[in-house]
Length: 485
Image 1 (cartoon, helix red, strand yellow):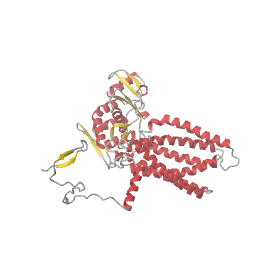
Image 2: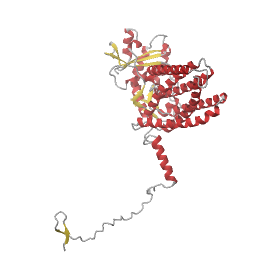
Image 3: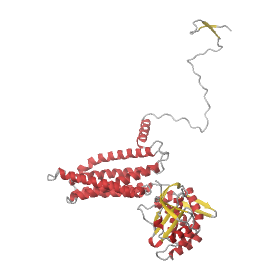
Image 4: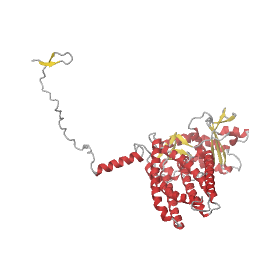
């Protein structure tokens, strides 16, 4: 091997390098051999070009601006339908609001030479003052119920919004009653603001599927802002056409408000909430006990011993959920009631402890249409769900006769007849005790059926009160304590 001469830059002298048997040409790259094509294999998708590339880029940009990241996998299946209906109702609300704003300005004296600045200011201050008081009072009274009845209050907020717009439109026609009408409209709009914002947050929790509640809420705000901007542009075209035409104005208002309410009904109807509130739990229990032809979607079965309970799923129950709070209820249910609401004497307390369970006690007063549940301090986390379902079982027993195929129907039907013979003003302790014994078997099967049908049983929206009880055991002494915050 003949050595080649080289120069060592560090030492400054010659160095020997072994000669390579191959000639290295660094400007050439190795070209892999062409692999044979596999029949049925997909070829790489070419990059779009021309109009296709522009359209795809535009759609991608709109998705990033208006839709949550990862759509549609990052949101619930009912997201797109709900947002489309919500955009339509927001557009109608914006157009009707522009007409109402013109009426408010007329009511406070804009364009009236006899009106004074002080009078207009006082009317405006009155509106704001009534709104502040209403906002605080409503949040105090109903704040804890907004999560539990999100669909109901979402619809109620939009009905109140339409009522406030009508009041504002009527204000110029009655100058003497104008300030009172504007104050009532402001109060209604403040309720709309509290209820609408709270229910929007609750629905964002439902729609988020990747712990992306903030992203879902932010994109919902972007969509609403875009729709409101479109509504303002249309309002600029609509207001000059309706100037001086009151009948045409009221016709446009009627069309807008009707479309607004219809869109809200459509939006609420698309929701498929998997969390259990009292109306949905009532429907799920009623479907499990009575069955029916209305089962058309997912269902799940729970088995405990020889008892099998088939429960309708969220797809079946949500369309049947009443949109008016308290509708279709036979009993007023107080979950987590204090001791003084449950019993009035030591004898009743001993009876309640004997007829209840180790985690809760139930007092049923059919003549008053009331059932109370006392929760024991330190009970398992699923106690409110089990206790509420037990109380709703008693409500079902007050209804029509159970069908022959109902789970444990042979044991439950005699309880129905005993409840109907209960003397007015008395508590059917025997029925309560027997239902507690049966619920020890039926209850676990029902809870397993809920889970199999797709309901969330680890988190619920049953709104228990803040009272918990302590007692030593059957026949012991009970004490009430508020639940720690």
